[in-house]
Image (cartoon, rainbow, N blue to C red; front, top):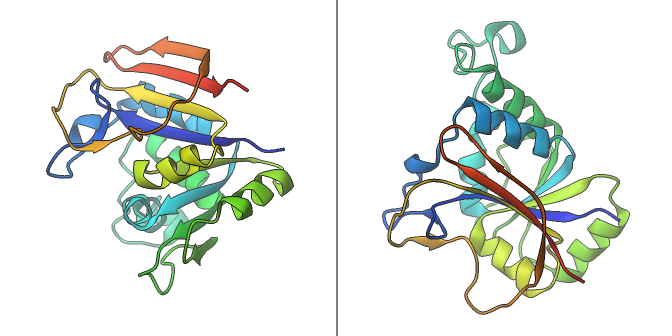
Length: 197
């Protein structure tokens, strides 16, 4: 059975965006981005809410380079290899977007579901050959409350932002076992936990 993994970049005080909605402080450097990419290679399906999907849609529309897209201004051509690598990883995966307001998807390999159905996600985990990733704390909170998340993979940025969008819901307790940790040169700390059965 596939795992459902919640991956997030957070502040030290546990937020994914500040009170204004900004997450500029969380931009990964090349070392962190390469690590994120390695973790994402096993993902076959991304689960998103509308807002996270709109942010992540950048990876679909940003041209990889003129040779691949015939775009006269390839946005990622002069970016680090890690960004082009992530774009290819993201484009190769399926996406499910939970939204009551989106009529159509702007990206390939994407379908829209009107509501989050825990039973449907359980069935998807059981039938998938590759792991699933859930993105965005609002949608992740639904999955956490339903007992669907198998692993948490957090990149903790060396910044305190004092408030905003919390990475985790405040009304659940989940016991965890540390699987992996790593400190990067820029001060980011990675911690990956499995849910204790």
